[in-house]
Amino acid sequence: MNVRQLRFFLQIAEIGSVTRAASFLHIAQPALSRQIRQLEDELGVTLFQRSDRGVVLTDAGRLLRDRAVALLRHFERVRQEVRDEFNEPSGELTVAMPPSMFDLVTLPAVTSYRERYPNVQLRVIEGISGILNAWSMVELGRADLAIVTNIEPLATLDTAPFLHEALCLIGPKGAGLDPDKPVGLEEVARHPLMTPSRPNSLRLIIETALAQRKLPLDVKLEGTTPHLLLGLVEQGAGFATLPFCSAYRRLREGRVCLAPIEGVEVSWTLIQAREQPLSTAGERMKSLLRDVATERVAAGEWKLCRVAP
Image (cartoon, rainbow, N blue to C red; front, top):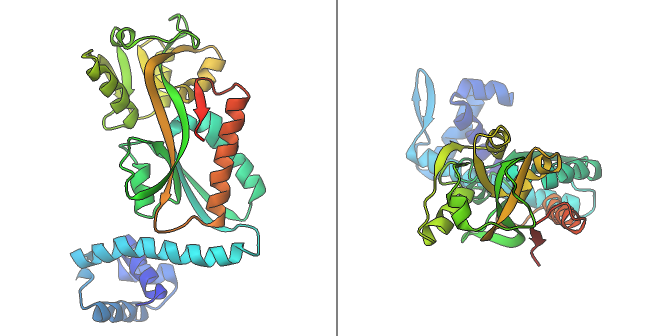
């Protein structure tokens, strides 16, 4: 079994056809089929079920696919580390970011990174907990670095505390909420709320806080993005419970108002795979994310937030 065979195998698995995969890979179909037969013979298993409509993975094939993705990423990372030791960072880097941080972290960090490291093929995914599962993408080797909340299942990953910020009650501009005047959970329970869909971690944080006080959660609408929820808040459709960073731009422009919820906090964590160290490109991004966040907090733009030591 070699890297070339694994790449051929993954291409066929993705396309579902040996013929189309051969065309994509610019290799003769008989030669491609021979490589897969050799791989099956070596492993002693059948990797594909073949039919007139194409091929589908067997159980053994699915297992190899899951392992091969991480293995090839590790191989590429080792090769890239050797290159980057003596050259500017290059290669590929996939980062999963929470949509809440778009204005304060994601956009400025990505802009700066592209200027500094133009040879890196950067892929940014705005992952939502419970929807795209940024933590599982890192665990499966489909993302190199991610920012998630600390209530995600992180036991199998390397973690580093990133930020702590207040969860806020956010209302339309005339609701009278003040960032300098925290509100209690009793106040939150009195409002109709629009929240992320379960099992989103921001939803679970407010659910847990209210349940511990035996207070009701009056959910009038569920959405999958802060952009949607805050757009509805702005239109006067209700209130949202989201971190300050979600509402940063709308608050600055006077389109919403907010107040921190007493005793309720969101802790953000940087995660990466435990068994595969970050490439140089990944380490530079990790450092840049911290620098951007620290600058925003120090400048007073990111209120109700503190950088983790």
